Length: 219
Image (cartoon, rainbow, N blue to C red; front, side):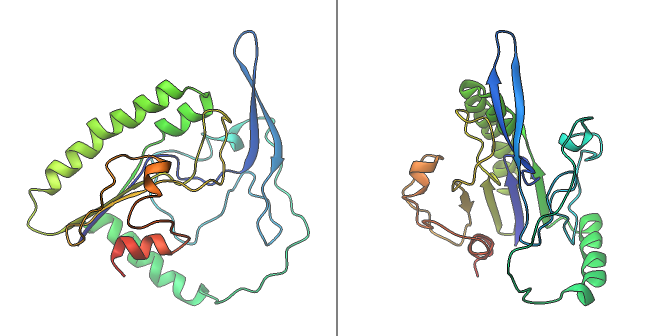
C-alpha cells in the first residue's frame, strides 16, 4: 500500500507558551511559560529529541525560537513519577539504518510538511488561514489525488495538523484536531466538510495517541 501522510501545520512540538499583544504599529509576542516533559527536561532549544529523524527542508539552528538572541534557556525541573515501559536502545541502530534506506530508495512513503496555516494562525489572520487551507486543497491535495488515481496499487492518504493554532489565541493549543483519511478499501462516511465540528460526526470519532496510525494503516 502506498502511504501518504500530509500534515498541514508545523512538525515541531511547541516549546513554550506565547501570547501576541496588539500594538499601534505591529505586534509584540511574549513568551509567558515553558513546557516540560515528564523527565523534567524543558523543550527549549531542542524540542523533543526523536530517536528517528524525518528529513526537513529547514535548518532548526537558523529557523525557530532557538535562533533568537533572547530565547529562554534550556533547564530542568523535578521529574514526574513515571516508569519507562521498554528500553529500545538496542534496536535503534538497525531501525535508523532501515529508516534512512527507505528515505533514499523507497517511494512508498511520502511525508509533506506545510506550515502556511500555522503561521496564519500565529498572525491571528482568519481570512488568510482559510485561504491557506483552500490553496492546500487546490495546489497540493488535488494533484496528489489525481496522480495516485493513475497508479495500479491502492493508495491511503491522511490529512491532518499536528496541533491547533486558533487565530483568536495566536498560539498552539492542545485542542483535538480534525483529520481526514482516504482508503480505497474502507467505505467513506457522510461527512463532507473538513473542520472540528464536522469531524466529530465522522466514522472514526475521536482517536487518541497511536489509535490514529493504527486506523490509518487499517490495523
